[in-house]
Image 1: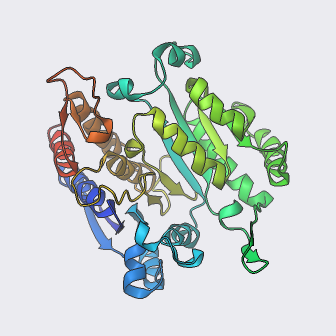
Image 2 (image 1 turned 60 degrees about the vertical axis):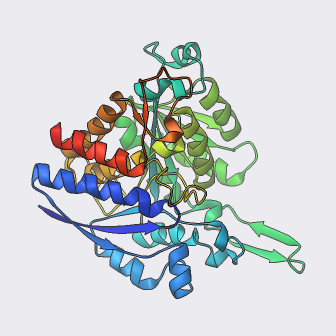
Amino acid sequence: MDYSIALVPGDGIGPEVIAPATEVLDTVGDRYGHGFHYVELVAGGKAIDSSGEPLPRETLEAAKQCDALLLGAVGGPQWETLPGHLRPERALLGLRSGLGVFANLRPVALLPQLKDACPIKDEVLRESNPQGKPHFDLLIVRELTGGIYFGERGREDAGKRAFDTETYSWEEIERVLRIGYTAAGLRRKRLCVVDKANVLESSRLWREVASAVAQEYPGIETSYLYVDNCAMQLIRAPGQFDVIVTSNLFGDILSDEASVLTGSIGMLPSASLSSIAPGSKGPMGMYEPIHGSAPDIAGRDLANPLGTILSAAMLLRYSFNLEHEAAAVEAAVQAVLDEGLRTQDIARRSALPGTEKVVGTQAMGEAVCKALANG
């Protein structure tokens, strides 16, 4: 079967991590008889340089015609002084809104090969894991097209006073909660709503909606945490969490915090969706690693491509319903880590000589392709 994938390499290390991800997809196609056709599009800083705007209309329209979108990263210091509406990051907001993807799924799991890169002690991990193992596996579901990132904003008093508005509707909260409950139903059937209901009126609405929606999912345990407490609990006992559902701002911050527990932000993929439909071809989705453009290492073959490769696996799973193929990509990543291959961000300085081999972006991608082809 043939599929079309919009590619937005973007800025910084974006093109460097997109390249091995597409090579992995091509290997999947060769092994399983699929055809992946790519439409490369411009957004972010490169689009500003070429057209004067972060998200040209033709980019969004072309993306809508594809079955899924895979993005590298956008942004860089050369565009930081531009007005807010012209910053590269506005391309992300525009793509999410224009494609109608409102739920961002960010899996955060500690792989056994990278356990020593986790800053939390084994005994702490065991205490919070129901099975008593030094491990955690959680999913953060972040609302993506509402909240303070999309609320009214501006400057007053000759630019000396600024405001950003957090706004949510019942419908916006309900739809992302339903995706969270669907995900929890496929996992360990626990869902935690994270908010700041002791201070924010918008968070109090989150709790009201969650209380109503939870009645429709009696088989799933629902709990609530304030965001500051959740930030602490992620460090103190990450194994207690299964699925976390939260707002745009809180999800952005908490998922970056959680990424440190896995050893590197370069390991984490994400999927932006409008629904989860197990067993059928899914909706158009936007897939990207959660790391930034890392301009300090761009062009040096140092970036970790595994977050992007794992994002491609999520693309196969959620938009194309190719579960077997997605699992094969994930198994290939595990196999490469078993071999001791590491990019510099996940290498252990204390590792015994000969147990790890530090490789660059391209070599890591090639190793995953080889493992996938031979798997």
